[in-house]
Length: 89
Image (cartoon, rainbow, N blue to C red):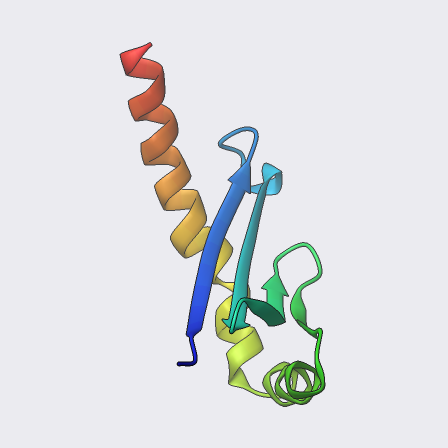
C-alpha cells in the first residue's frame, strides 16, 4: 500500500516567539516531498510533485494561513509545555 502523512513540528530553545521554528512536512511513502518552514516563510518542494504544490500554495491563501501557525499553534503550546516542564523539575 501507499502511505501519505503530514508531520507538524515546533522546535524551540526558549518560549520567545523568535526562538521557535514551525515546520509542516508532507510525506508520501516515507519521502518528504514538500515542507513549510517559518524560518523560510514559504513552501519548498523536494520532488517534482512537491515543487508544483509549493508553487501553487505559495501563490495562494495556503501560505498566508500557514505563516500564522507559528504564533497560533507553537507559541501557545510551547508556553504550556515550558510551564509544565519547569514546575515538575
